[in-house]
View 1 (cartoon, rainbow, N blue to C red):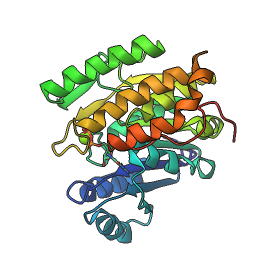
View 2: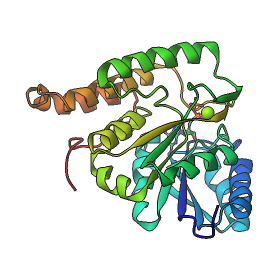
View 3: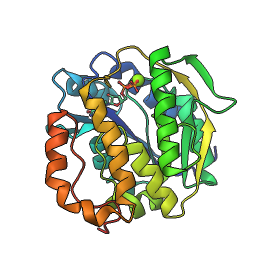
View 4: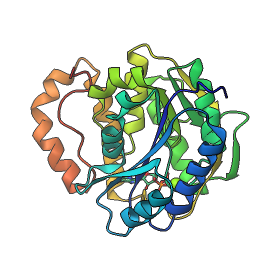
Length: 274
Ligand SMILES: Nc1nc2c(ncn2[C@@H]2O[C@H](COP(=O)(O)OP(=O)(O)O)[C@@H](O)[C@H]2O)c(=O)[nH]1
Ligand SMILES: [Mg+2]
């Protein structure tokens, strides 16, 4: 890459990651120091951690000043953490995110970054020919994941094979334009993001990636998972002509999310302007 590589800011959403995040942060910092010619920063976005993730991040940050943490005590969810992190878009040229467990190696993330000279958003895909899965998800996860994909494709027709891969990178301008339409706080956040980008005419490249699924997932299949399905349906309804009739049900919706112990979407509508 040339000396003039764009500034890059990488977000890592983290929930109780004391066991996994330390080596991942150090690997990313070392790799990008030696391989990337532009300014590189990492921001870990924590929320509601009940372990020592923050301490671990601070310890690694003492050695690598390009790393810092944002900590939100409220249960804002992975999506909520990313919405907060993406507010930093105006401070950089490219902004992206990866999972804190190292499922995407630094070289695989850089591979996505390199495609950003031609696209507004580049997303890693585990389901395109050419992708390399060192350890794939469990059989149960893959079945659920394909069912979820079919459901999302049926509702949104985006033609994206892997909306849920945790590695994505975008140009600052695209994030600035759509940030106010990001509302979904759970892992359906990615659909909110991709659909908003598409609606606003931004180009998205789905690029085969290298992925090593890690043990110790923080995303459990329980009552809270119903919140993810609810978020997808909710997002679809917002963009439908029926939405104005459903608006009075909003207070009920917050109650349902609370009952499911799922992170509540941000108030407002996806197309709200700032
Ligand atoms: N900030 C924040 N991060 C979360 C939350 N839930 C999951 N994450 C992070 O989201 C990423 C993906 O989670 P992971 O457990 O690897 O999920 P999986 O491998 O897809 O099952 C990891 O970096 C998690 O720490 C949350 O509620 N808040
Ligand atoms: Mg994982």
